[in-house]
Length: 489
Image (cartoon, rainbow, N blue to C red; front, top):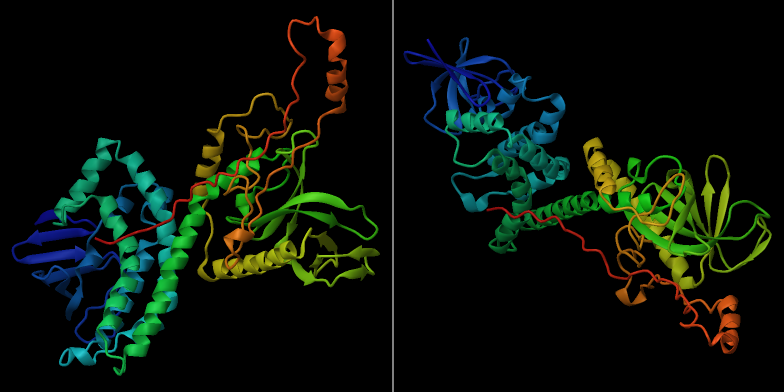
């Protein structure tokens, strides 16, 4: 007997008998397919086809997917001296879940294909039936950048280079590095809308499958758009972490512990309790929470943390102009946040009606985003949070400003984590309606005004008195946003 290692199992050869160890369970209802469990040893009787092999377990014979006993993951799991469980999770993500989903999807797709009359096939219903399953690609795509970074670190060691290349050669896989193989699921999910669009283009409108293909195309476009959007959000978490580092006197958990997107920001008047004092604050609405900040009296571009509101516990109440009985104040362009558990109420006053409308739209967008994230299980991994924290540490600290709790990054500290000097506006609002967040110029200090009047008495000075310092305004240059775009070969 001669032992030959495969990419994911152990091939045993001797005379004409070849055996392979299964990587995953293979559950099937088809008569000609062979069912087995992970770890079972299968006698391979015919391996002439690269995709399907004919094998035997005890007295049962049948076809089984060759990939169930091939690949990298199985060998990596065997090498505990080289790979930890956390590394394997980062590198391969949920690729096994994707594979199991794809096996079921392809099996159902083949059932919809009419071998005798291909033009009578009905493909659309299969996509609609499996539409919820495609969301598992979101987790994989979000993790793909971390996988590439982890592989890049490992490939600096020649041991890992030789290990992955040996896996590829022994399984006679095409000449592509492992990161190329791991890109395949990303490319696949992006190809579906293109393929369905082509299918719809060449399907007659009176065909029984036409409306199903059109619906499938809309579904898959929505899936890819949402995956791209969540990928963009993950690529922007570094900016959110940097913004938090610029806020002085920060307390409590980090923004990224619960949130991943800045939805809207603006300045409003705020009253927390009845008969309380009207306070001017800058509010930052993220998914799940809204952060309250106060501007520095001298440096208006510096913010101090003043609290946060848990949006999961509050409901938004629109209020008509008039007098409020709870707070005993006259209101205009106002709305409330009401805690459904404690009955606490926050009262807000926007400067204009248009601004109030934007805030109400932003609150609706926040709830919609939270619901969609819960539906697909979107979250920021601990590794991604650590990467964001490391990025913040690399930002040079500003000189001349100190604090016992936090120090802002290099000047100017952004008022908006994603677009410096600008508000974020929800979809559907024209760009012309965006207000630029800049401070008005302040009048000249009385001290320097009096000093200027006294110049006649100090003309003997070798140099003129100091000039008035103009206040610094925030930059309005928008930050570049990297959009996730994966295109298949």
